[in-house]
Length: 98
Image (spheres, rainbow, N blue to C red):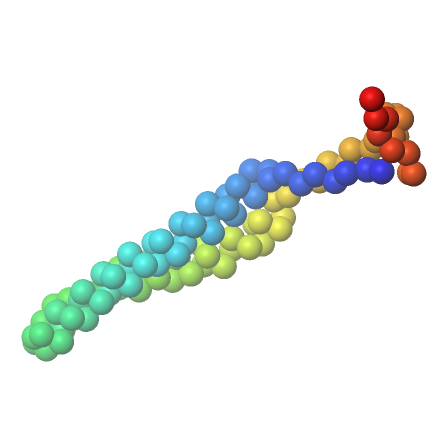
């Protein structure tokens, strides 16, 4: 009987990092966006002076990072097959009891 092991390569670990970094950075961008929108709600005349472009760009980039995590996890895997043929354990053989 053979066993199949799965390990992450460099791309797989990049996918793991993107899986955590993307949502955390998105939360930070949403927090900044909500602060600026609350400032506009308090004083509508400040809407001309506040720029929302940095938060919107951050949200877009974090969305791309989050969506790219899953393909990187799938691509960045390597498989290792371990055969037990030479160990004496075959099909139907049990371990000896002492």
